Image (cartoon, helix red, strand yellow):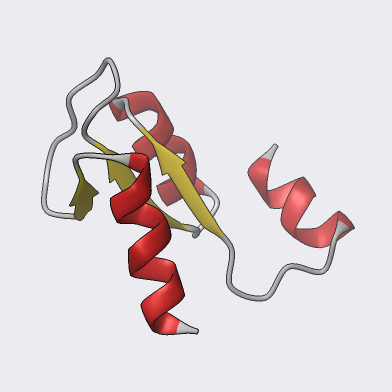
Amino acid sequence: MLTNIKKEYSLVNPVYIGDTAGDQEAATLANVEFIHAAYGFGKIDGKTKSFNSFPAIVEYFMDKA
């Protein structure tokens, strides 16, 4: 499904922000960068960018702009 969204909207560098291992797996299968919302419900395996609040995620992307 994420692969279809990438194609349909011609997304070049999408990011999936999620809080579960299933979210992480979906992003990996679609070759989409994954960012862990650690303030959510789930846990993830492996190393990835992780943030403890929504404002921290916003700040991260604003600094990249």
